[in-house]
Length: 287
Image (cartoon, rainbow, N blue to C red; front, side):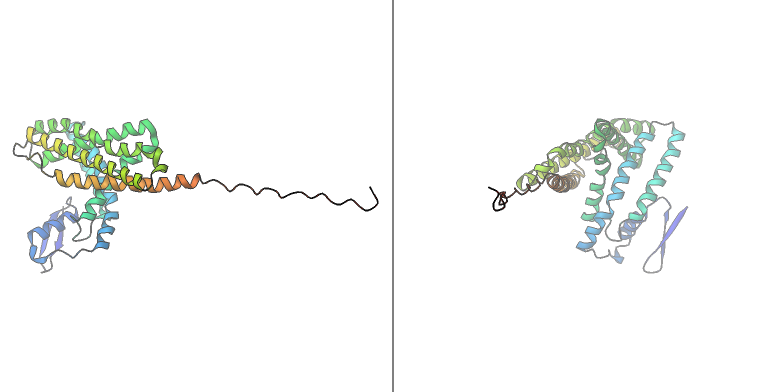
């Protein structure tokens, strides 16, 4: 099946049904630059940042499910992949970026922050939750490697090899979010310079993790199915968004949890001390 998009000059362009509408809009702007891109605003960037949270989280879960589906027999995997894509597309559709905001900083940052939410959600579950977070990262890494191999036209054997190797960068995905979770017990002490320091540390960890994962994915592509793959391709952008995400998430968590903890431990005012007691006078003639 397919759907059509009307151009400003009256012509229409047909796209396959499984291509998200925001991707179709990006293709139209690339193929028909004469129509220009809609003007963006600072408020629009902020709005798109919030809208990008859900697609970012859904995208991570979709990658993890894709990686897990590789364990199934080929026919079953194909069916599972179609279902995964269908569910993910439906979940992201209400939050699709407005025209002109598909590749803006606000939108990409929102999606980057959203991709950490599933990891952070595992925090309250203790050790089991953290193990689940690592497993989620492993699945997402395998899924990304498999998807990239498919898009590059890799053979079945190459796809399988890339998927297996993808668990290595995938395992790194949970590192920075789990580090942020590990700092929760000291959130009440984070204020002023200390809060800035914690945000910078989290940003550095997230940037390093994203760069390392991206490098590993590029290395897999180069060694398995795409010899011309540049090892540093995309690393700068990944590190930048990762760093901003880590700093933002750590800062917001310290602000929220720290304020809550300080509010809960505010000492109550001591009760007023009773004034001096004055004995009543004895009635006259009783002494």
